[in-house]
Length: 238
Ligand SMILES: [Zn+2]
View 1 (cartoon, protein in one colour):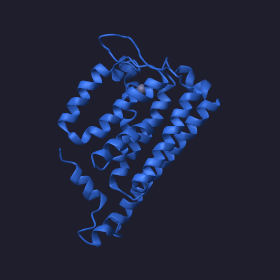
View 2 (view 1 turned 120 degrees about the vertical axis):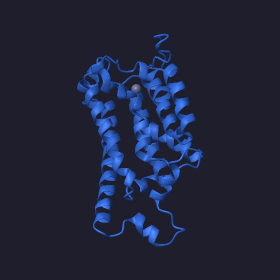
View 3 (view 1 turned 180 degrees about the vertical axis):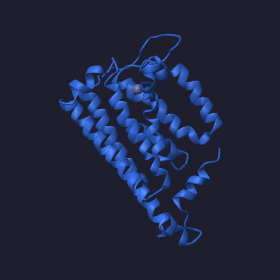
View 4 (view 1 turned 60 degrees about the horizontal axis):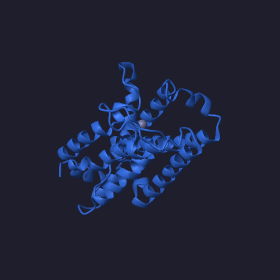
């Protein structure tokens, strides 16, 4: 999820595009949503991790909406960076079942290092870009931060039942390697929950008539553009 933000944020910065924070976080774990469909026979780390299927889909989405590029890159890095390093991915499904990856292990010291390192890098990039401030400035879109928050925890919960990751959650929580990951996950969850809270509080205040920080910006004059206005301007295809 942190890697999703790092890549999406870098692309958005390159394109001078305002990043939708919750979407960047969801993009980073989107291929793992296959876990939600395991009841329908979809095996985790198979078709949703196939580059042969993902690349044409990614190209079509970007062709349809240019401003989806940061999030599409966020999805692709999940397979090409995160999962490639920690485990292996079937890049050519359904044509071939061959799996490629460095298989550093999950859990492993290397995996913990990647997880904690990417979380720290994400926080640094958020601080530098002003996204950290945006998390708590009451932006309406931050209400949707419940989506990455719920996704992260429901996927972790459901992953415990996956054959491939079966032992991981039960045996792993006592180990140092997973301690780093779970404390990082708690920090990330706290960040997202606080962001939702700040946005809800801001909506509540707006409902009661006292101006939100965004509205105060509008009152200050037309040159002072609020975040919400910029967000609307970003909606149209480029
Ligand atoms: Zn995955």
